[in-house]
Amino acid sequence: MENKKSISFTLLVVAIILGVTLFKQFDFKNLKFEQPALAVIYIIVFVCSIYFLVKKPKKSSEK
Image (cartoon, rainbow, N blue to C red; front, side, top):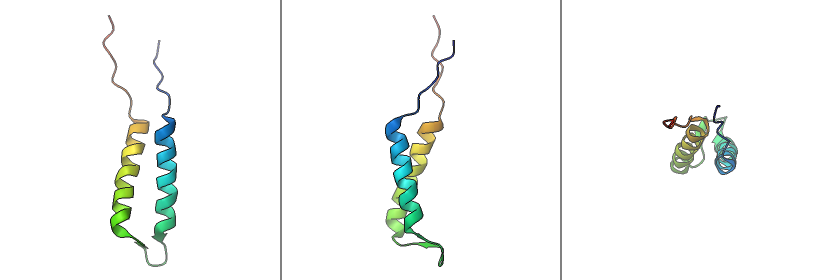
């Protein structure tokens, strides 16, 4: 039997909120963020949340 990992609802909400926030803060005309320091923190947390969403769990040893 395969163990299917369910998607974490909390991480999904965090990823969506941060993605929308990053999109809104990016100035496409000048290709810069309005608040670069805050954008760096948003990007780090966004990438971590996406990583944990798609990361496959380690297979536990079967007895």
